[in-house]
Image (cartoon, rainbow, N blue to C red; front, side, top):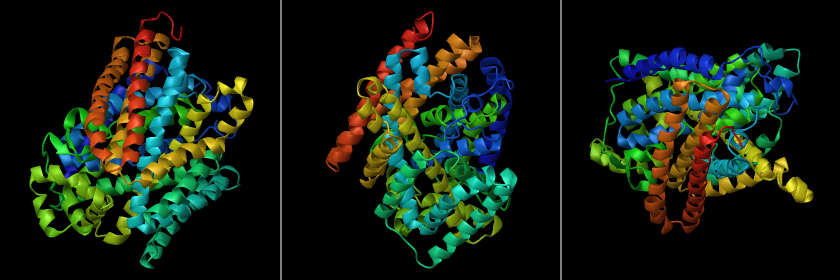
Length: 585
């Protein structure tokens, strides 16, 4: 089998589900009404509630939800083999992810742009609101930690991409001004922005050629300062224009990479070299033998489905949706685009991963050993982590070089740029959403301790708190332990969001049998799967980590224990909510 088969099957699968399954949800469950005013229009404030062009919002939403999850997660999961990883991605996309993402967005739109946690409080109980928000905040701490590590690791090894990324960030306010405040308008600002992006990428290539480099810890500090500022500024100043321009990089990277995998196959190249299947219990999570089910959600996060998407959809995107008819493209289409990204990563790694490992510096003897599926399952994840996951951009670069003859080094810089562009958008969005969750948790203090509330709920303090804790966890470099904890909390969040969505669909939207089943079934499946996986993680992985890093084991273990406890409590609240005659009573 070759790469072209994977790409074509994925595209056909997504197109069929968008036109059938997606349209059913839009017409029969949500009953989207283009004439109904959205929160972005009714509650416009120029900071968070700002109507956006649907393509700008699609770009912002897609870039925000994608992050490093659909890229790094499948790359790690290749230890089980490319076939089970790909099947999980496709299954998660079309049966769970799209339902979760689209309905989380639209339920928030119907509740004035409130978060999914607020909606859980409205439909279940006030206790559920605080439990859900607490869960979200702890989950977002791990998001910041995982993505900060990935970005810093890649920037350390491909510093030109780091330089180009931050030049683009500094230019984003200018692009935003040109699009929203200058006579150039949206189209003129876009053209100028694309020119500046090209110059930034070229500048990164030149700077790297001159020997520019920063170490891992320096990049962490830079990221810390950046995400605090980005999470506190109005969305139109930095997030909207930066994410919109990033979206062009991301779309181009998907088009270039996807077409490259088809072209190399047409040239007789692109055969899948990585093993299709290694073993059911490959060494993946924390370096321990990990059963594919139920632990796969601890690794393949956002590429299959993601609870983080419900926070983005109900936290920022719902406040920018200008028309209910745009929701299917933004929510449903965004999830499918992310699934295609994971498909692309799996295809490029399966075909060019061995070349990428060699390029990253792996010795010939070890490389030969990895051709044995059992050895691959035992050693691959640890080796790729040691090589700072450069296997991902390098495999992409080999695919593009093989298809179009473009030089390897500039393409590798570009590949690192688009990978970290995904991660950066999710990193600062996660910090902003963590600010929202923290501020909502502090609301009880408003009446009893107003001074404390003003300090603790201050947007700069709330942003800095989650950013500092997350970056300190990234500093420990225990990535193969932090990533599964993040992914598990994230995947469990998807089931909790689906529970809230199911109550909305059943109690408020009065959906019929199929509409109910499309939300209840994935909620229960994910809750059972991820709860079992996290319990396994606490029993197997955390004790093994204890001898290596007590602080990391204690911190990550405590967050996971709290998450599992809140999850069980919210499951009980969900059952009670479904049995009540009226929601929230």
